[in-house]
Length: 95
Image (cartoon, rainbow, N blue to C red):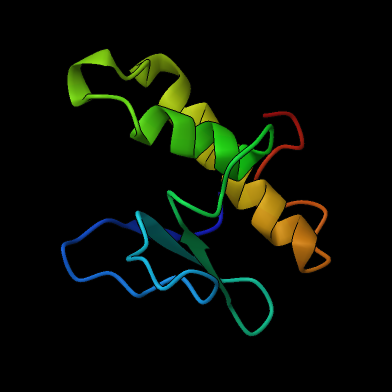
């Protein structure tokens, strides 16, 4: 899998839509770099980001951690696809 970073800290950038602090950020080393931001308020619905937000919105002890990794990968794939990348280099197409 290509190197990427997913970061969760107390000093997160703000969502450009609502101004709320991001829950997660990621940087994919594709092309000139793809910066992704996950907002608990704006990223909702039946999308990779929305599914990840749904898990993060649960109390820590109730989060289905067996799905967390899959949802992160789905979110990263969706972000790459939004920028024209069909597959993250060095990763199989099935996730």
